[in-house]
Amino acid sequence: MRWLAICLLGAALAAGDAPLFTDQEWTGAQPAAARPAAEAPGWGSIATLGGGLVLVVALAVGLGWTAKRLNARRLLGGRGRSMELVETIQIGPRRQLALVSVAGQWLVVGLGDKELTHIATLPAPPPAPASAPPPSPFASELARLVPAPAEPKP
Image (cartoon, rainbow, N blue to C red; front, side, top):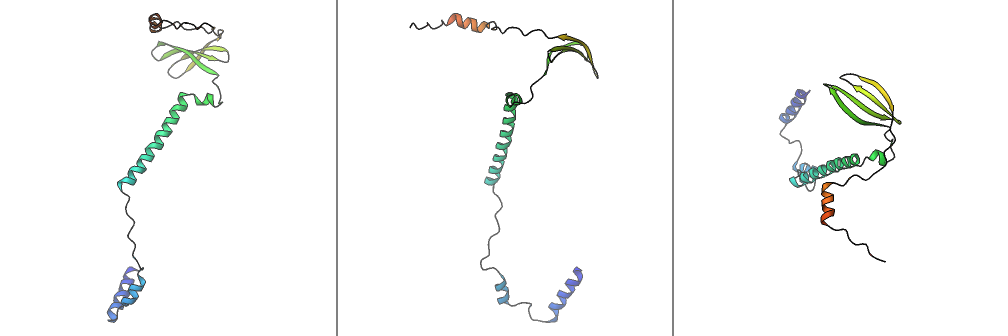
């Protein structure tokens, strides 16, 4: 197909000395003011785009970390935890005992390489009364060095 178009164009050019179009036709076909081609983006616009991308990714990572840190599922009224791992103890290579709290009961579970084994079910002990933890050595030394402020008299 290309060869046919080239042959026809060559035959039209060779057939006569008359040009295909005149200078007036050529200038009339051109736009009045040629516009320059669009400039390629410079380093400034690339840096702005990259900075915006870094900001959006940092914001997403920061919000994810904050949600995990604040336990957002619990704060937003999501499903509470009904099961809790109380303690685990290693009893051999790749063998553990786990104490799991489920619905007011404690389950003793054996954990192996590829299996879990229920060993015992125990009633959960009553919650211990909330007591103040003993002061740390630093707190007791600070209390000894800095006297407590006097109570104002009415």
